[in-house]
Image (cartoon, rainbow, N blue to C red; front, side):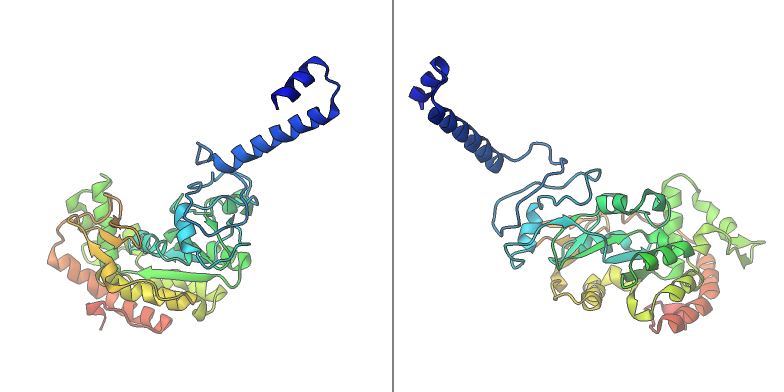
Length: 349
C-alpha cells in the first residue's frame, strides 16, 4: 500500500493503485460505522434488521426524529425479542392499546408494570401523551414520534388517564383505530377522591381542613361540580365511550385490588390482550415509603414508582368519609351493572 501511495503522489498515473486506494478507504469507513456506537443516544439512526444477540445497542430514539425511520432497539428489547426472527425491524408503531383512566387510581404503576412484560412496549416519555385531547392538532406523525421502538407482535401501550373525561377523545380514538383495546383502572371513588385531595394538599393547592367545605354544599349535599367529586362519577364519564366501543373492547380493572394484588389484575390484562403469562406472585412488593415496586427479570433488584407516589393521606373525619360513601354507594351499583362486574368496594351493597 505504501508503494501505491508513493506512485499516486508522484505520478498520479496508475489507475490500478488509485482504485485500490479508494476501495481500502471506503472499507475502513464502513468498518468504523459498524463498530462505533453513536455517543448521543438521543440521535435517531437507521439500523440493520434485528439480530438476536447480547450486544448492547442505542438506548432510545429522539422523539423529534422522522417518524418512519426504524431505530436501533434498546438492550431490554433484545432480551424481549429472542424469538422474533432475523428479519424483524424495530420501528415506531402507533399504539395498539390505551389506558384511558382513571386519574389517581394506579395508572402509573399499571403502565410501569406492563412495560416489564416481554410482549409489551409502553410509552414512557412522555408518560402521558394527551394526544387525543390537548395535542390532537399536532397530527399523527407527532403521535408516532413519541412511540417507543417496537417489533412486530409487540403491543404498544400508552396511558393518559384524562381521556376518560372527554367525549371527543372517545370519538377520535375510535376513528383512529376501531379495534384498539382500552383499559380502565378504577379505584373506590371515595378513595380516589381522597387521593386527589392528598395530592392537592401536597401541592399547596388546598389545606388539610379544606375537604369538607370543598365537597359539600351547605354542609350536606355533595358538590358534583367540584373536580375531586366529578372525576369519581365513573358512570357519567363512561357513557360516551360505550357509544363508540363495544364492551368486549374495554377492560375494567379494580384499582383497590391492584394495590393489594397486582398479579391478579395484570393477569387480566394478559388474558385481555392475548399475551403469555409472564408475571409471578412474588414479583411485587411495597417499599418503606408505601410505593409499589416490581422485581426486575432477568436482571437483579426492583423498580419502584417515583418518590412522589405513595404519599400518605391527610386524616379524614369519619363522618365525612361515611357521607361520601353514602353518596357513592348507589352510583357504584349503577357502575357494576353497566360494566357487568363487581369490585371489592365494601360499602357498595
